[in-house]
Length: 80
Image (cartoon, rainbow, N blue to C red; front, side):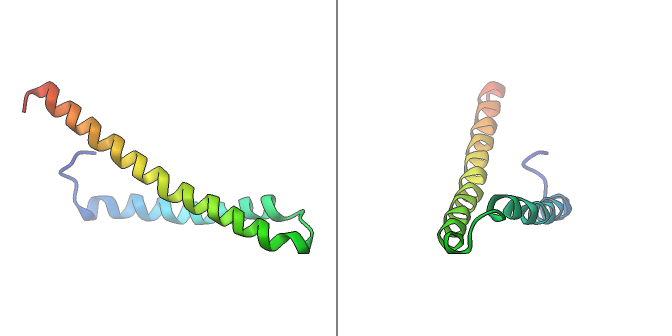
């Protein structure tokens, strides 16, 4: 993967990643919330979604920052 990749080259891998992530979330949710009594389900499900959404936002941002820094370091090493 290089900075020269375009939309069409990334479409299939990103689509597969997104679909597999959604398929994986159903059993994870069932395992995490399946044994709770109904009166605790509302608050626990809210907390579960909060942590899932935060993880979904922080991880790509950290990866993008790391990738951008890696490209910067590579350019420094090449002297460009």
